[in-house]
Image 1: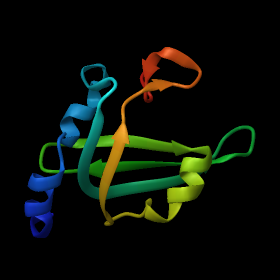
Image 2 (image 1 turned 90 degrees about the vertical axis):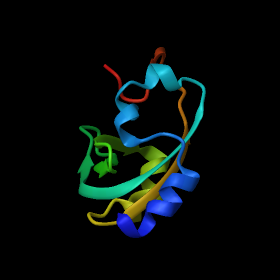
Image 3 (image 1 turned 180 degrees about the vertical axis):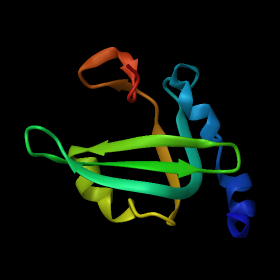
Length: 104
């Protein structure tokens, strides 16, 4: 990741270790980067594909899951040793407005 240190400092507004508590980031546009340390392509009980990755930066690691159209659109990037820059908006889950992301 050292080769991307300048870009990480310039373009990222959230380190990976802050993604564990999304309540502080509710409603915000975030940008973070890191290296994919593991990736799993799976299928739900109903037969729909999804993917789970661990992404790591200098501050820590976080697990991210992609479902439905997001998974189909980005599955080629769910590859170990890929460097990713991700922009997202922290918002409520579609089926429960009181939860953010994959919080239980």
